Length: 350
Image 1: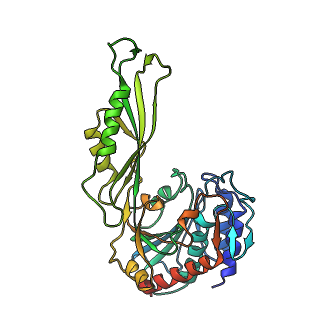
Image 2: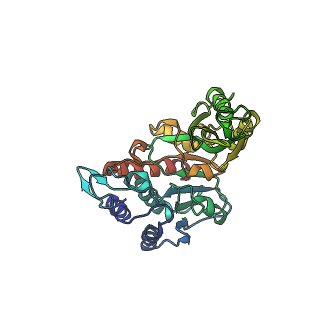
Image 3: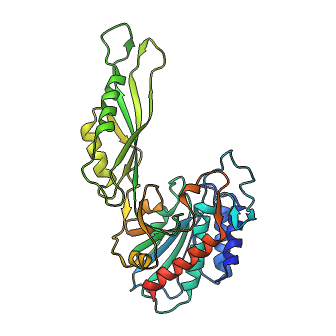
């Protein structure tokens, strides 16, 4: 495996801006990479995907997925975020860690297995868009075009340890209604007081089911808004609840519990970003453990949330570098990523 090809591909991706919804140029780069390897690929919007050469409809299928979009760089960068500086064993630049390293490592892994016959599973590579924004034209839009997926590896920075569970996300808008009026009068109903009662419930409520790897469902009130001036009781008070859902509940189940207990109007922005998990006895997980990898639960959201099959989050890099200034990946992390992807998959494919 030529690690330098993966390094050069990563540097090319870093130097090409690919904010969520604006990934057309990096999609071109990824498509050209596969074309140069004589791999037939498909493109849907800015999503690039391909099947292994000897794809067999009678076999189960593994999806290799990561995303090539990035967030926008923050103002604390001390260098050009689109200049892929290579120094002291590091490659610096926006998207290098999240998730460029996973993209190039999974592509190299797919190329490694592409021509092999008699694999026990099919492989599909899908490098997708709009992960950072949970947009409508990412992996979620592509799934209808893909064959049935039995298991997925989602490439995100995990230091090549296996995140076998991931919390889902619910963002909920709550609106408490009142009767507006002059603050000096008594014939008003203050929606702020109604909101406070509901916020107290959010603060104190404990969901019954705790996950082995994800712990409890966590609710946090993160925004609140009411009133325009000091002497007017407002007509309404709105607040936002951020809910991180464990794998013991669906988002709809959590939403129903919240609606049953709050007096105010409850509206979920989306219920699609569900928690995900995989049995720790799954043969892929056990193959990783056999190679010395740890298993854990991840609090951060990824494209696992739109998958209905079992999945694991696994990739080179460190999640704490994601979205920070002066993002970087170590060259040896990419080498380790490719090596471990191939070794773990070899355990179940060959």
